[in-house]
Image (cartoon, rainbow, N blue to C red; front, side, top):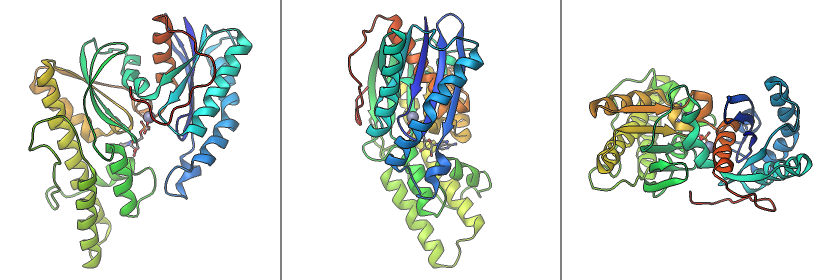
Amino acid sequence: MRVLGIETSCDETGIALYDSERGLLADALFSQIDLHRVYGGVVPELASRDHVKRLVPLMREVFASAGVAEGDVDGVVYTAGPGLVGALLVGGACARALAFAWGVPALGVHHMEGHLLAPMLEASPPAFPFVALLVSGGHTQLVRVDGIGQYQLLGESLDDAAGEAFDKTAKLMGLPYPGGPEIARLAASGTPGRFVFPRPMTDRPGLDFSFSGLKTATLNAWQQCVAQGDAGEQTRCDVALAFEQAVVDTLTIKCKRALKACGLNRLVIAGGVSANRHLRASLEAMAKGLKGELFYARPEFCTDNGAMIAYAGCQRLMAGQHDQSGIEARARWPM
Ligand code: KG4
Ligand code: ZN
């Protein structure tokens, strides 16, 4: 089965062609980061309008680079949520129109299922069952995965998502959007131990997270430095490192707890924050300690992309999931 996948849930237009026998045939992405950076975050209306401009040229590009005739697919799958409704509607309308024109089914896919399954596109994919840590700009979740569509939520953030905490903390420190990669870049030159921030909710049982207090602790420390006239580049790096370390430690402690609770030692990390090198190293060491293994996608498939949607949608269509009529677009949607 060959499917065209379309991702437009936020500020990236992603398109890909996935073939169940040959794997990923082609993918293309347009990131709107430069468009939104001046506003310090994503402007939904600008995002929708830009998706309108990019979809068809990107779609043509993937068919051409895969050497597949336009429309020679068995289905068109698209991100139906969660995300920005206007942006989702653009992708959904495009997918449904193409599917109608080509006489194939269209299917709405859950964005987080896309992220969750992105590591399946790598050369050595994880076998089921495994524990997945989903860490994106909108979600922080621990999920037990027993197969495609067999997901059990183990824990999640009660307030900010991990990526959101990176973005908001970066903004408070005057860093550009998106803040995750910026903080990671500064943290690489930070002085370990100069600042120490809390590891929220690690001293009590359970698998839920909370990152908003950590964000406030970081802001307070930074503002104190500013007040003391000590807000130079090195201090910025030191604060960034302490913040990143606190997030990484917290995620590592909870992942270890989740693996033990499930009696598993395979851990998958997915979503934008899973591109963080410090997080990967920490989880890799923890998994090794449990004689287990860590799996993740290549960096460009950690953040939003069309390939993960094409893959997830292809699995769903092959499992016999039916075409729905209309265009699905859900701002919120539990997985
Ligand atoms: O999965 P994603 O592309 O979009 C959502 O579905 O939300 O995740 C974007 C998030 C942003 O919050 C961004 O700051 C964060 O992932 N991010 C990172 C890194 N790269 C992206 N956070 C920490 N370290 C990184 N290297
Ligand atoms: Zn995402």
